[in-house]
Image: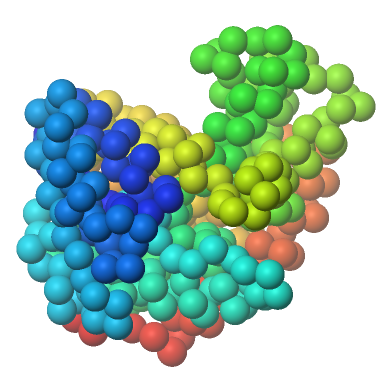
Length: 328
């Protein structure tokens, strides 16, 4: 059984993510942490989830805005084997990607720094945008602290979930039988679904591939627009995060070696030290970063096109890490 913490657990993603993790039979204890300005108190989320018919013990922890996680999260994080971080600010109108990185990298740094001190052997799964930059920043500081790089992972599972659902709907397949690998990054054109590597995906008419590709890339915007600008993809993101979390937990227990797409430190594409591809999880976290297999001509072209964009976003994260370190 595994002890898990959700940092940002009282937010729009954090609440449903916490509920799904509390339902996981392999999770024995769930700690929910959030700031005192969260939509509801984390203690209230914990009390609510503690009434569910599962053996999982649920605890709530809170910190005031402006305080440092490393000074307040010892009890919350000690003993945790998986920490999921759906934290950070959403991108606001007029905000550049660089603006968003500066805000959210600082938020992620505070939390990952606390993990480095109090649960350095835990897997830390980041749902903090922009993932393409935040993960390289956190990984670099994690390694500077002398810690195991197999423990840091960026959550890109929602791209896979969306691709599977859209393809199933397009070709009339059972979504349980569809498994579309999605490689590259986790934003816009850096998202590359490999339809050619699924039997269902191969049924998509050639003339529709580009549109399906774009549909997966723009799915987040579709949700934002459908919510009238009053929210983003919180429920599907929680589902996707729980799917990855469940796989990581199974790997930690050593019962299975689950394979999921995730954004990690990688050497499979020259010039891109971070890349999303299939990853095998085990007792130490990321056990193997797998190659992306054979690509068709459309996919080769797309990979070449996304490479400069993803490289630039990785470099932005690495630049942040040049002037920042964990205080542990």
